[in-house]
Amino acid sequence: MCGEAYVLPLSFMALWVRPDEFHQTFNFRYLDSEWKPEILFRSINESFEAFDSVGAPSTWVLSNHDIIRHASRMGGVTGRPTASDGIGPNDPQPDRELGLRRARGATLFTLGLPGSTYLYQGEELGLPEHTTLEGKYRQDPTFARTGGARVGRDGCRVPLPWEAGVGAANGFNESGLAWLPQPELYAEYSRDQQEGVTGSTLELYKQALALRKTLRIGEGSFAWLPQFTNERALGYRNGDVLVIHNFGTDALPLPRGKILVASQSGLVEGQLLDPDQTVWIAI
Image 1: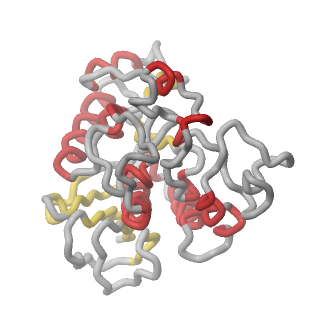
Image 2 (image 1 turned 180 degrees about the vertical axis):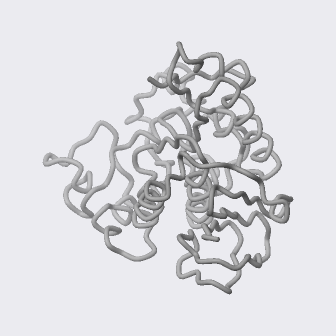
């Protein structure tokens, strides 16, 4: 049983997951880190300190049904994710390429952490937010209650694309109809366009999740890597795996070791890690 409770500080939230309480609770502190190294560093430390104190696993999450999808959020949307009003057609539009690159790196960094990771439907496809949804389709009460001043959460609740071009909903169902229409660009994110395609976001998720299970990452350990803990990078060790993310603007030299998985397509040992990318290295 998992509590969807926005309770801070985490030392207070940890009281909800004592042995006779909930099994887990969502970690909104981590979700609200805005993907900045200094905030992430503090939130990860706070998470382990709080949940370890009651013998509960920490949880990690980047997207859910109430906030802008992180593939769009990381493409230029600023501010605390849980305080967002959503993105509408008249708002500045996120950079899709930048957002997806950062989202892939963020996911791989997160999946390397010990504890439990929660994935939101569609992020395995790299789905962006539906940011151009017309008002006539919106169903979130937030939109109606504020007269459209806040567009709300419908943009992250659009049905998933399965087969490109199969009906208006890209194979989501046989009728082609859905409670929220997909944007045209969702066709290129469809499962059938990514399955088995080297370097696709779907295959990255499948590879990382398989490794996480095989290497028992969720049951592992955690220690920061001092040489990769600064404004340019964050890195940690989980068992015999190094996880390193490049927050800088220049490519990052990496320690020796076998590359297990990387958000940077085609990365091999001896190469540099590009900005916004994450790698797992076996030592």
